[in-house]
Length: 321
Length: 304
Image (cartoon, rainbow over all chains, first blue to last red; front, side, top):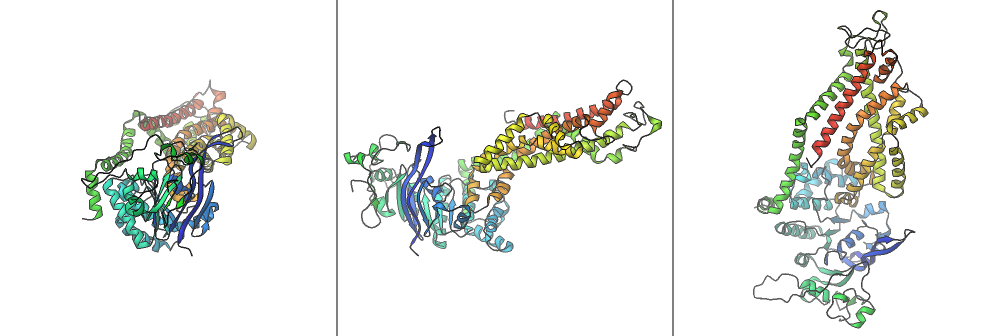
């Protein structure tokens, strides 16, 4: 068995926006346009980028909530990109998702305890009495009281609901959890609790995460490695420490300079990018970032740079390096 | 301090969290407000009283009258309303009040069963169309639009023509003629609920389509369907009476309101009460249901 729990190879997801008379797509939004990444067992890979760069689409496509246009999704060595519904059901015992909005991801008409029990029932995990025990166990694990089992979702606060969503995802004993902006719908004070909970669960249960977020501080705290995404492509991927101390791609550099510096006296130069993000329908030729890059050269508009290894696990997609 | 204490504290301090909480409490209040408003609404109250009286009459028919609804009495033919026969008697000497009371049973039974069947047909088709989309949706929507474009009564008569007369066939005809409304409503509900995150969650948690449809979407889609069903009941009552009046539904001596109305038709100049009272009953009951339905719509309208 290899050390990789997930490996994604040239994954693409295009959405048709306009079609001609024959129903053939004329224009497509290239939300995810050729992504390669891998996650090792027990590792947290952060995925950052601004809104609309395709982070969430990447997560959803890996989970097959969206069907990929192209590419391979190797989960524990098996390509799940072409799996049918029945096959996917078995995959979902090891691969789970934590949603962004805990207000929308719970069925408002189901008591939270029975919602989690239902998951165990569907996967035929244990018998009825043991399932009740397991739900109790899960509630305890995420810091909720047993009495809370008989309540409806609307009786909980946002943070508590996210705990329920986490408990539900853990019910099947997954190995990899895709966290799609798990804390961005929550208050700052509660964000910290949920992040700490995710972190301790990871250590306790030997989980791996794909941690999608636009909040750089949380990604820095959570991740072992971080991938930076821009307009449907990964522009840089490196161990978290290395990326945050020494970002090499001009976009990563600009993105990371936006983190607020908390040390008094220490001033950091903020790099403000010019212009707007180009349309993912017609991305620029060559390097996608060249329209806003201050180092843009002639060759940047001609051919697209490849993701280049700079030694170790640091990859960057830029002609400067 | 435990995590929960902190959370409780934060809920008190942070205005955003508080706003969310308040919103939820308001949702709860909304329902009690809804019931209160409904009771204050005069139309709703009148409608509810009529509906209740109708249902009680149908259920307790044998206790309300001492006459038989179908054995003729030669000594009491065509008597005007009196103390013994408050709604008079018909050409066979049968008590019209008794026949109307038992007729309420027929009306209620036919209406409830027919509405139940059409609700099931419409819900199942609407659920399939809304959930699966694509070709299934296209086919079902086309058929629904065709069914929707015909007047319900006309369609019911067409089905009776094919099936033959009789109460059982009336039920089937009404059900087959009136499912399209439910189908449209349920399809719309499914289209919107399907997009919500908890349905995606259910899919990722490995649940089957049938489980998602019946346990997750349907319970969240039922409210408008229930309102619609209460508004369909009076329609079914009128169609049953119409079909029976035309001789296509209940057959004499069965005491359907349509049959009684029809039997008095030829005697309007001698015994107008035979037709008058069943007609009045149909009017009052339909009025009651519609008053209640209108009140329901008023109360549920957020702009009022």
